[in-house]
Amino acid sequence: MRLSRYILPFVATSLLCAADEPAPAAPAVAEINQRVLALENQASQQIAERLAILAFAELTWRATHGDPRDGNDNHFALGQFDLFMSRNIRENSRFLSEVVIEADQDGNTVVDLERCLLAYRPFSELELSAGRYHTHMGWWNATYHHGEWFQPTIGRPAGLEFEDGGGILPVHFIGLAAEKGFSWSAVELKLIAEVGNGRGPAPDPPQVSADANDSKAVNLAFSLSPTAFPDLEFGASFAFDDIPKFTGNSDFPAHGELDEHIAGIYGALQHGPLQSNLEVFTVRHHDPFNGTTTTSRTGYALIAWRCARARHRDLTPYFRADRLVVDDGDSYFGSTDDRTDLHLGLRWDMTSVIAVKLQGTRSTYTFANGDHPRSSGVAVQFSGRF
Image (cartoon, rainbow, N blue to C red; front, side):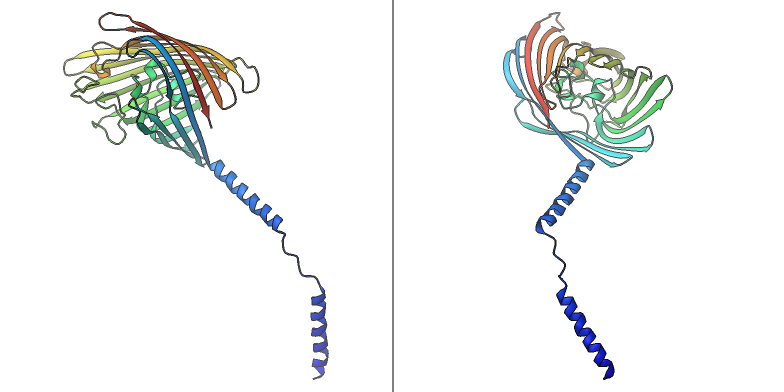
C-alpha cells in the first residue's frame, strides 16, 4: 500500500503531461501528392530509359511524265508508318524491333515485322545477334532502314530497293549475325558474318518462317576507317546462296536451281556538311544444270552538302545517280528493266523532327528490244519522326 502511494501519483502525473503535449501533425495532403508525383516521375523515367519508342511517317506527292510503266501520273501517296522500339536489357544486351504499316498496290493495309533483333555482347567489340535484320551489304542498307526521314533523298537507290520494290539485293536476313571490331593505331576494322534463310524461288517475299531448301545464305563483310580521318569509311561484302527452282507465275518466269554470288564494294564520307557515297554491286547467277551464267550490276553515287541556316533549319542540296543493269538472260529477276536515274533535290529540315524534300528525277530505260524511253518527274515529300 505504501508503494502504491508513490506509483499512482507518478502514473497520473505522466498521463496528464502526455495529454498536455501536442500530437504529431499528420503530413499535409499537398506534401503527399508531391511525393506521389515524384515517385511517378521517377518510375516513368526508369521506364523511358529501358524502352525507347519512335515513330516515323511520310507523305509524298509525285508527278511523272513519259514513264513507260505508268505513263503520266499525278498522285499523293501515304508511305510507311514505321514504329521503332528498342531497349537495353542490360549493359551487354539489347533488343530492337521495327514494325511497318503500309498500303500495297491494291490499297490494302499490310503490317510487316521488318526487323526484330536480340543482340548480346559477351565482351567488348564483339556483338552476337539473332532475328530479322538488314544485311551488311554495302553502306546504305546497313545505315538507312525504314524511316524515310533519315535518308537525305526521296527513296532508296534503284538496286537497293526492298524486296517488294524491285531491288536485286537480299536486303533482309532471318538468322544469326556476328560483328567484331578491331582498333589499331592507324585503322579501325570491323568484321561481319551473317547466316540466314536464303532467297526463295522468287525475290519476294523473304523466307521468314521456313526455307525452301536446306542450304543457308551467308554474307561476309568488312569495313575500315583510317584513325586519322574517321569520317571516311571503306568496305566490301561477299554473299553466296543456293536458290531453289521455280515453276513460274504471272510476275516471274520459271527457272532451275541457281548458285548466287553477290559482291559489293563501297566508300562513304561524312565530314562536316559534306556527305558522299559510292557503292557498286555484282549479282551472278549460275545454273548448274545447263551451265549458263548471268551477271547483273547495280550501284549509285551520292553527294550532299548541308547548309546550316539556323538551329534545326538546315538546307541540304543533293545529287544522286542510280544505275541498274539486269542481264537479259537472268529469269530470276523477271521483267526488271535496265535503268539510269538522275535525282537532283533539296532537303529542308523545318524543325528537329520534320523534313521536307523536293526532288526532280530524269530516268532512262533500256529494253530488251533496244528501245531507250525516257521519263521525268518531280516529287515533294513530308517526313517526320515522333
